[in-house]
Image 1 (spheres, rainbow over the protein chains, first blue to last red):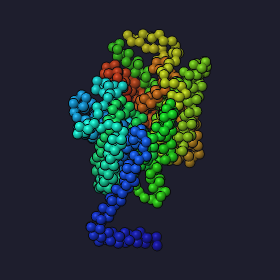
Image 2: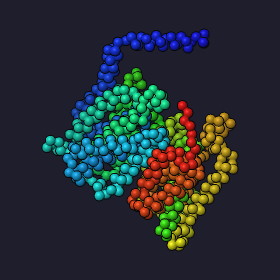
Image 3: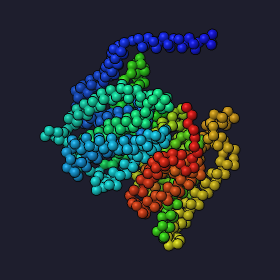
Image 4: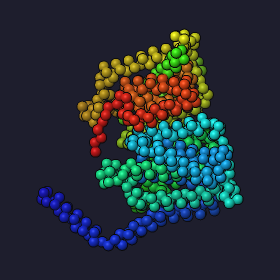
Length: 345
Length: 290
């Protein structure tokens, strides 16, 4: 009996495989389309929130906080692509925020490049930097990877602090306003819409990426790098690709932050910021697009709600980071999804 | 030549502190596989604790002892309430937990102490000693002697006592150690306590030279980590050599290249070591099992 069991299982598998081969290609395609549609449907609640929220806002302050939530949502989404899908950690992602931010600050003031173009150049520069450092860094694993990315982020922060001729040093520098078709973008409400739409665009791109062959390859890498390699996946190339994409997301968030605040200091790429981004990803839920936004919302709104305890900023942040890593490693959105019947977001 | 010698002196002094931080890292890493980024906060707590107990009128020697004890308790608390509950987490999660602990401890220091820079009086006065055209502070000698003393004691403790044997057994194989009746929890907890005490002493020794403040810990932890990367993670000899080497590299970089990029050296070292020889100078090659 025990000798027969494997044989029987083999027959069963063979029968299933034959059935799968018999299924016409169009049915498979339909299923893919359906899957993709179902994935995009998960964005509907977010769209609804984007539209409804302004009805509840009584002052510009609310718009600003909400704008910041979407902004950090973009950065967290970028990092989540790397952490949640490819399973690679980065403790230095704020470095890319710095590159994006200083691009829109230095581009127009020092080189006379229009802000919009600087914005794009910043994203390209981040992509280039990620491409160059990514290959050696992503060869590393676990704590080596954590420390290398951490070192990379701090190196960038040191450069931003020391190159005072360009960056204004530790005191920071002013960022010229973004003017789009003779229309200066200012006011919290305007930025709310820009950032909400940017987040949604980023989310759609991310969802499509996740659902592509590349996305599946990345998830295979996450589960087992060796198995992925055996399956013929170019692990190094895929990891590098997602690292570059994730750097671009974060860089764009950095550019937005600089434009929104009109002022930047090297703190934007500091060590604490990188850790905050990681906490957002884990808190919201690794591998969850909606989770990135939820994580960002908690870590943006909580300090605002706790401004009374300004002195205790680091105490609170430290407790949040520890608490999230110890008790909420599964993340808010995946935990909720599991509780409400296994729907994936 | 005198200039060169000067850089060597300052490099070795700072390097000795990096070595102590690195030893603390290694102790915890070998016992528990945790890379403890709150190690720098132990250094800061020892120094700040002594300063503020001193301000409160406690004689400095007693203040130092109490500060080391407090830091030891903090080390135990870190193990009990941050590491034990996350025992089954992966390496990266544990790193982020200790980073959270480091931010938390820094925040507490900010509130309990203050945001200023503080110093302690040097043990043997502050008249520099001339040596071959360069000068060396008496406190540097104290730091070196202290570091040497701690390392010898630690070596004797790990190499000659039953507890040390247990630490080595756990480092070799945790499950096997537990099977032969070693209480891993107590041993790992003790490593955290010991490591915290070493960090606190290092902080007190170096404060007369480098000053201390609530946020001085993070950078030290990263330097200590660079040192163990350089020496090879898990190796005690590597930690000491790596620490002193990093101190020297920094001193030369500050002297000959640019003082403002001194702090960047540690990170460049980390990246260079990882890219070129990922196991460090003294690390053993391991085979990855699938």
